[in-house]
Structures are given as structure tokens and as C-alpha cells.
Image 1 (spheres, rainbow, N blue to C red):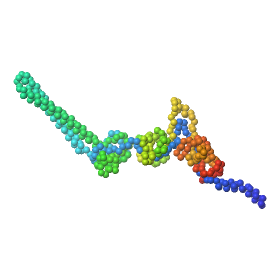
Image 2 (cartoon, rainbow, N blue to C red; image 1 turned 45 degrees about the vertical axis):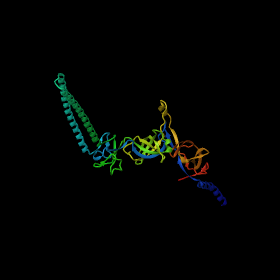
Image 3 (cartoon, rainbow, N blue to C red; image 1 turned 30 degrees about the vertical axis):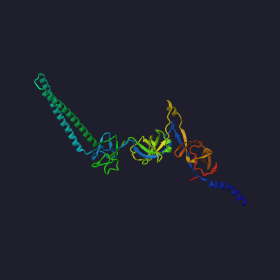
Image 4 (cartoon, one colour; image 1 turned 120 degrees about the vertical axis):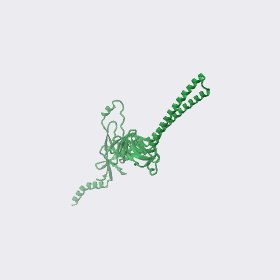
Length: 397
């Protein structure tokens, strides 16, 4: 019996020892290295930076009135499409119409006075000529000739006065016509009314009136050009260096997470916000559809831009280059020791330390150019004191 127990113990001992060693092994969390194919000439699939913001129209205007008054007619509602120069609202202008009519009649009156002055001048000029002819024959007196000359000069002056009166009356007509035109509100560009800010019967003013102070000072509508939509977002000062002009991007709306829109970096604002340490950035949405609406929340993923092809025929040469694989691992899997980067790879239940060569950062991941292959299980946040070839237990298994 002792011999049998000894034999059984010897047979069970390795298994029990291995079981105890496995149970004592540290528990680790792993992630698998991912594989991304970079097409020749660059790729737009590798993310560089993520930012959130809001959809805005590149061209948007709060359209207001030029003169104060009561709104007589509105020709729009939210969603109405308008053309540049189209009248979208009118202010009551019966009093200005009356002034215009009075100005036009003043022109007619001045023209009639001019006709009278011209007739009087012609008669006085003829009388002057007669007096000069009589003076040559010695029939008239110098006083009569002088009086005829003075009368002709006065008539000429009256003609000039009448002409000036006509010009002044016509100028008043133009001023009044402009006042009538100012009662019409016209669309500044082709677009869509996205917000209606007034109703018929309201009194409006270019500077706002009582009850309208909370609005944009006399604005009656907001018009936006929905053909050019973009995302207004903010990027930390520390990340601005990662952005380049015309950088490609992916845009996702919070309302439609499954839909991805193509974007392009349009502008990095020339000034930063000192208090927030951020820089405003605008990203144009290249293929916006009816789902994209101003003021929607959106996220922007900036991507690695295409590299410019150099020389003639570069496109055909690049087309023959096979796709370049890029392996990505989480940054939490990388450790530093003596200036060398390492990752721990789980193989057969053991942790194996591998030196790696790192590439560019990709958000919370980093490129690994050598040392790790696609699908390798790397340990996240390796525990201190972990030894090469040591047993480990994978969390969740």
C-alpha cells in the first residue's frame, strides 16, 4: 500500500504542482494586435486625432431690416428656399408711398415752372434784340435798352433756378424710392431659411425694439447655404501640430452613428483661446446629405493625409507597389527599459518579452514596425516584476 501511494503521489505531483503554479500566476488583461493595410501613396484609414463639435453652415446670415416699422407681409417659413435678391418680407410703407407721390408731383410742378421761365426768357431776349435794333436807328433810349437787357438776364436766372428745382425734386424722388425699397427685405444669397424670428404685425427695427432685445437686433430670419456645411470644432494647442492643410477626415453625427461622411480640414484659425488653450478648426463635409443639419453634434476623426506623388508617371509606379501592412497595439501594452521599448506577448500561457520598434501614434494606439505580428496577444499594463517566460493567467478565461 505504501508503494502504491508513493507511485500515485509521484504521478499526481507534476500535475498538482503545475496547477498550483498556474493559480499563483498573475492575472493579466490582453489585447490583440490589429492589422491595417496602408495603400500606396498614403491612407485615410489611419486616425490621427479625434475632436467633437457642431455642424454649421459656412455661409449663414441673420437677415434684418434697414428701416423700422410694422411687418406687413412675410413670404417664408422654416425650410423655405430663397434666391439671392428675392423679397422675403415687407414693412408697411403707405406713408412713404404718399411721400413718393408728393415728390413726383413736385417734379411735375417744377417742370411746369421751368416751361414758364423758358417762355418768359425767350420773350425778354426777343425784346432785347428789338431794343438793340431800335438803338442803332436812334429811335429808342438808353434806359429802355438797359431795361430790356436786365429783364433778359433776370429771365435767364429764373430758368436756371427752375432747372435746379427740377434736379432737387428728382433727387427727392430717388430718396423716397430708396426709402420704399428699404421696406423690402431681400435674401442676401441663395439658401434656406433655418429660423423664423418674426411674425406679421410685429414692429421691428434695425437696432431691436422692446420685446426683441433677446434676438439679434432686428433680425427677422436666419438664412443658411446648406450646400456648404462644415463642422466647427476645437483642438488642444498640444495637438494642433498633428493637423495639416486639407487633411482628410471622417465625420459622424451623433444622431446617425452608422453613417460616415467624408471631410476635409478647411481652416485652422490664426488665433488661439488663451483661457481654454484651444484652437478653433473648421472641417468641410464633402458629401453632406439631407440628414446633416446645422447645430447637430458631430465627431471628427482626422486621418493621415495622402502623400503627394512625385514626378510624372508616379501614379502608375505607385500602383505597382503592394500595400504596406501596419500593426497597431494599445499604448498601454508598451513598456520602456534602458531606452528600449518592449511588449509582453502571451504565448502558451507564458509571458514573453519582445523588443519592438515603434512608429507614429494613432489616438490610443501606436504603430509597431517590428517585433509584433497581427493577432499577437499583448499584455496591457504589465504587472511590475513580471519575468520573461513566466506563467500568467488571462483575465476572463
